[in-house]
Length: 140
Image (cartoon, rainbow, N blue to C red; front, top):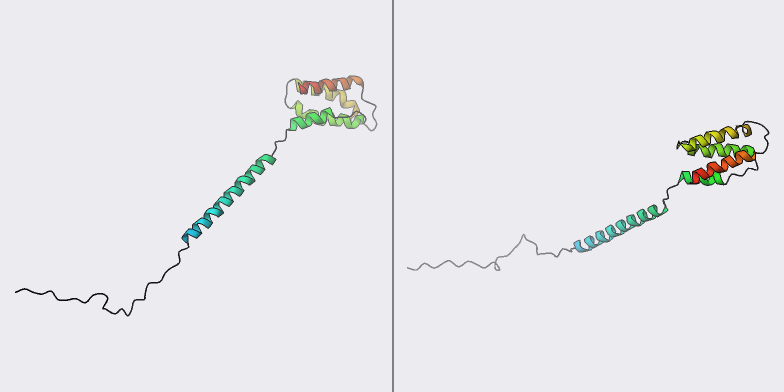
């Protein structure tokens, strides 16, 4: 005897009551990825641009050069102001020591009669010449 296999109903014949049909879900992942990439490029570009502008605008101030220019531009019309200005600006170079300190001490000694008094006379030519030597010494 030949047994016959029972006939099974096909899956199309069974009614489905609890399962809902397939629904298409919209996929926006590519749009989100491209938006994030554009945002990242804009942020990185902005950061590079701001850093570049900052580095271009930032300038180191050379105090020694500014003080040297201030010393060169001192006018001897008002001897009291000139004496105080020479003392103030020259002190920066005296801190470097060596020959600057010795020259500054001597110049400050020569300028003492023109400071601390109510009325002073014009600065003598010898002190002005010593001041010019001090400025040339700094320039060298």
